[in-house]
Image (cartoon, rainbow, N blue to C red; front, side, top):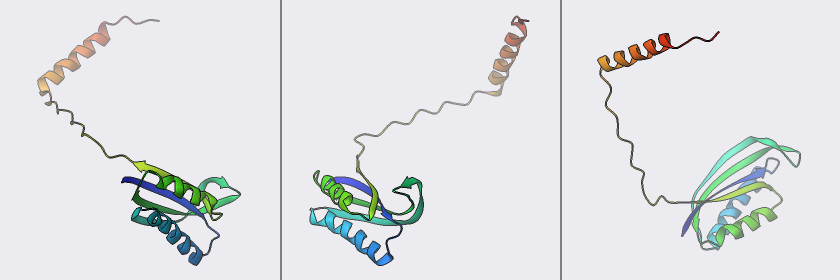
Length: 132
């Protein structure tokens, strides 16, 4: 089973009872298609970045779920057919196959070396020709 996330925006004018039913309906679609709902978070009413169909606010809902490869297509079809859902996006989560090795930490330069480097850079600036 693959791991997926879906974020969908419900029209802000939908009443609370209908909104709860819609969220349950989306979870039901996932479970009806042999999927497993891991987490559902209601982010609440937020202002949209730009107006969609002359609407400036929407109710955001996030859901994480596991399912087969055909499930996102079916879920996307159902979300697109619903008039109350303004936008939706489904993303497949990819598990890392290997970890990245951290960079080795360099030892700090002693104070004498730091002063020597500073003196060399000052001398280089003084000896450089000045263009007028």
